[in-house]
Amino acid sequence: MGTTMNIPPTEVPAPCPDPDALPHPGLWQLISPGLPIGAFAYSQGLETAVEVGWVRDAQTTQVWLQGVLAHGLARLDIPVLVRLRDAWERGDTRAVEDWSGFLLASRESCELRTEERHLGTALARLLVGLDLAEAEVWADGRPVTLATMFALAASRWNIPTPSAALGYAWSWMENQTMAALKLVPLGQTDGQRMLRRIGSELAELVSQGAALPDEAIGASLPGLQYASMCHETQRTRLFRS
Image (cartoon, rainbow, N blue to C red):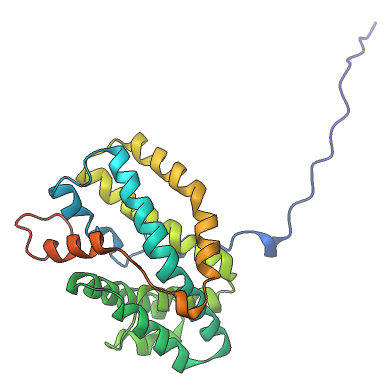
């Protein structure tokens, strides 16, 4: 005699989301730590901050990164990135050049300007290799920035502006966290805790930055600028900035 099993009815799985609403694979490529542009070689003054004792443990590292994010990246890089992507979308080369030059001029130390040019040029060359021919003229020494080429890729690969801005900020935060793991030093779990805590603020800060009017764009980071300038003559260094 057979037995009857009380098997609950199978729930119908929810339909897959609209592919157009999913994060674009191109964005994952742009923000990957494996992107071959050399971002891992820069600490943006963090190395000096550790050297002089401003940053010495997980708590002070988090405070440093949160400060740079809130008063620098969110108020300068993000609103400029948004304008650059819009300019690329409209085919306004003059606006692209103007905003790229503005961002480069906002880097207040030799090391930060050199970093900006190096990363922008490296990404331009990579994009040419990925069949984005428009990037070629930006690999020849004109005032290019990382945001300039990131915005070009976002425009041509149809990455929405909010996603591009959030991805750009996340990439910066991850690179800085990885630098802190080597410099402070911190454990891997400490780094992941910081990414989680700072990441919880990221979307709001990016949204605020993207909404800034032109006249409000600008960073205020005297500590970072001082650290970056001191790093130029620091005796022992792991990073290029």
